[in-house]
Length: 332
Image (cartoon, rainbow, N blue to C red):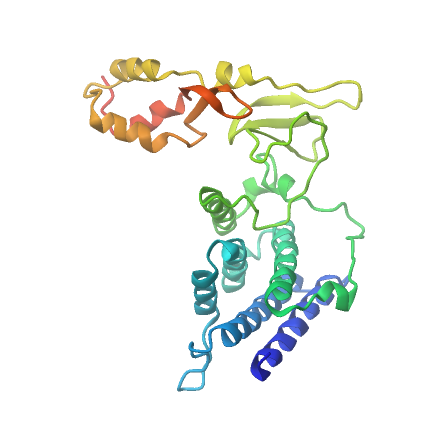
């Protein structure tokens, strides 16, 4: 390892360990602001070490003595590593956005979200360090810390639920949360299903392991109620019970009985009745093609739903008609 690389790595390790130590102090003001600044600093040092070690042709120090800015380092490493760096890039972009606009978030308690981002970031940092520099902080520090405190542990799912404090947060915070979902969605569309923040998992018993499930259940602190969500479309409430013998069963037919209720012919028929200028032409087919694959509007039903083989039929949600309103004129 080059001397400059080694010096950068040692400083990066010191910064990330300092961030962990400060975060885990039981009483400290300005906790997430300081920790985020240290984490960004640690990554900037490590990315510069990576560039210096593996891309010596790239100049880290400019003629005026300044070094390559953090954002440029992130973009460069992303361009060289591609998909392998995408989750790190989106996680860092989220934390960097918070760091640069801290003043906009002072009114809102978003500690649960910041914790989830930072916890994931520390894991990503150590993985990157092991992969490219053969260091493992877990072996050096032997850190295994669990949150112990005087309040119940905060859950990002509860914070983001429809009945949570999110309803009362500022515009800046809501936009920050929206961009988190956008970044996750962009990764998913690129074929990357790893989240940019730590996930809170619930153990369930099922018959098949499904990588990208159609059904998501979000449970809030109000444990008598939960939302059953099918591919981001809220379909209704379910009731939870303390009786362990009771079970919740969701059949595939529910998807096509209550959500994906329109066939292609039915979409065409309803569009003719709704719009005065509708024609079943190339324009219509282009619009529909753009909606296919988006679970909000479309789903294929296969003869073999497990292996997704055999004859498949297209089904649409009523929301497809709302989308068509953007392109056609409603009848008077």
